[in-house]
Length: 454
Picture 1 (cartoon, rainbow, N blue to C red):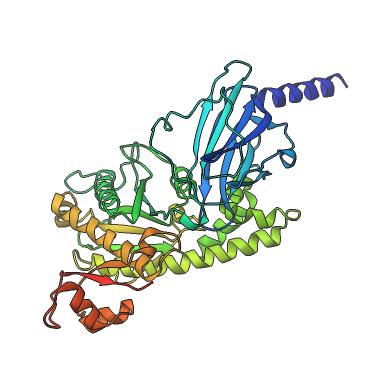
Picture 2: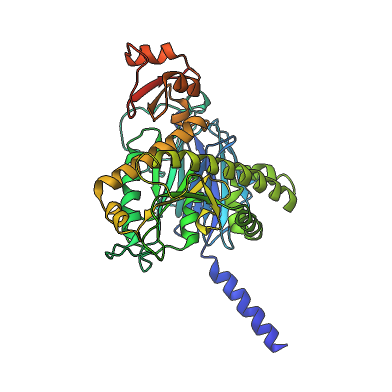
């Protein structure tokens, strides 16, 4: 009995110690300029947040770590045209309180903590731009965020003026830190090559106003597979590419290849996602407003994951085919079509993912090429062109690339104006007139602007 009492007491003490703070109150202050949501906390907040603007309802998701929510969110008075609903959501991990703000437009919030002041304690403030027809004003004690010091008038953003977002491309430089990867005959580390090409690819993507690059590592760091794939889910990436350099026991093999996740491995990852509450919450976050209407249904969870997984695998295979075509223009190919394999780094169920072997670092000639700055540029340009072409063929609604009325096309071998016109669904005469062409003659590598209709 004494032992049981001691164990129970220790468990209670541990449980209490693991919760460092609590949400004590939630206040909403709408105005003609913005709506401010204030979370009153018992201690300095530890939090992360992200937005979901891919579909409606538009959401801001805030995770308060080591925090207990003591507020009945259904009873919070909102009275805002910008914030529609404030509600709890399934916790991604023990000790975390997740709060979801459903908002009227895809408006990036300003989120910042405030320390104790006057009669107020620690707070987390969420400002969302947009007008509410109300005479309520922000209380004097609530200071502005550091980013809100400009005197320029802020234009309220509504559903009619939803900001278009760039495509998010996650780039993984294979290996790193204590893991050098394969080592070439002259001592070149694979991790050095992959990071160099990843940085060049990121620069190329970031130079495109329709895209934004996210690197899993920016330096010589050691990362676990879980850390690499968590970047994809955290950033809500539209595409994931992992870069590597192949190796073999003999120096003869050469050429690039592109790999996608095998069906067997994807089944394994789907099962793991269903068993891991935190990962399941991340994978299903943009449909959790549907799932929350009833009790947890493992069959419905699996149905959603199956649908997401099948779509991303099909898209990944198509993207791999396009990327291979682009790589074949700048380097030898070891394999002419995508291959499936059990690569753990391709485990994201929601995001089209590919693994690119840039060439055989074990081949002395290819090793020299892989560390050549110009060759790295060509590889990065080919990867960029392949990814961009995939999203031109498969536009993502709400992204600037999908909304663009002008698309750039680089003429490939075997292409004619009629072939290009058929691909984009426009007339040959339209392309000629827009680009000032006097004949149907075009050359490989020529850049054409393709005017697209809405």
